[in-house]
Structures are given as structure tokens and as C-alpha cells.
Picture 1 (tube, one colour):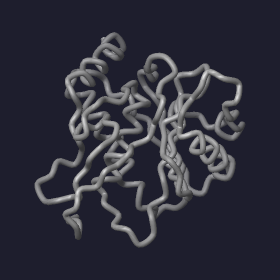
Picture 2: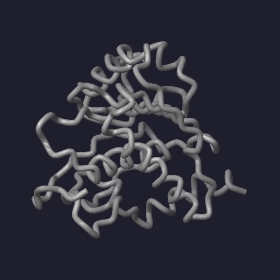
Picture 3: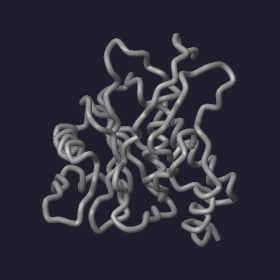
Picture 4: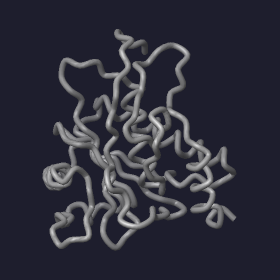
Length: 216
């Protein structure tokens, strides 16, 4: 698609404070569940494209892809509990702390058989990738598209890929035009633009360090 505008959009891709110590490695065959409000949800395709981006990146690094078991759940009965949990995390600016006041994960989230749960939220919230305590699992929430604003698929893909990047073990870098940036700058989609912002050599080295033994 071609965007109607040519302004550059500054994005704060918010998985702030990740992680508590060092980024964790997902299981070699991680299961990812996408909780979507409908089958026609506009964010579903960019989410699947972002997952494929990471699997392609792993293959390019001679690593076994990890996000290979993907399920989409539409109108899940757990949605209300997940939305409430996402709202609480968003109010904390997506920042885990060492204190006793972290919102407890709902049983509905724990009951989902997944290493990564991606909620395509109905809320206007601060999107995040939240590490679940005492596990290598992540809860990711993606903000609802704003009504009346351009739904730039390139922006969506990069936001979602950025949050998944935290789940596979990457942290923020100081580079506004790299995928794991904070803050970030993503142009409106134009013909010839790459679908995703690039990874840095530091990111690629980090992935090799985390996953090379699992690929042998």
C-alpha cells in the first residue's frame, strides 16, 4: 500500500524497562498465541508478517527459527481478563520493577498454552512486551488502531516486530532507524521502502549468543 502522507512519524515503541536483568532465551520451539478480537482484524496480517520476519532472520543467521508454532484465537473468553491485565501494565508504562506491587498475571493468561501471548487489544494503551515472572514467557499487547488515522501497515509491522524482538531476547538500542530503537523514527510507507527496519550487528550477535547452542 502507499501512504497518503509523506510526513515522518516518530514512534515510541514501548517495552520500557525490559528486562529486569538480562534478556531471556525462548524455548527452541516457542509457541505463540495471538488473541484477536475478530477474524478481519487489521493487525492480524502485520503480526503474522512480523513473526515470519523473525523466523527469516533466524534462518539468515543459520539458526533454527523459534516462533514456528502459531495459533490465532478469535474472541477468546479470556479476552476480558487479558485486557484488564494489559491496562494495568500499560499504566505502569510497561516497566517491571523489583518491588512487590507488580500486577499479578490472571489465571486466564497462565491457562493459555504458549511461550508468547500477543493480545491485539481493543484499548488505546501503551504497547509493551512484558516478561512473566519466573518464566521465559512473554505477554505482548498491541495498541488498538486509532479511528480516522491512516493505518500504515509498515508502521504496524515494525511496532509488532519490535515487541517480538524483546520476546526473543533483544533490548533497546540508541538508533532511531533500527528495529530495536528507542525512540524510533519510521517513515510513512513508500514504494521501495523495506518492510522492516534493520537489525544492528549487535542484535545479530546477541541472537547468535542466545540461540546458537540450541541450533546444533
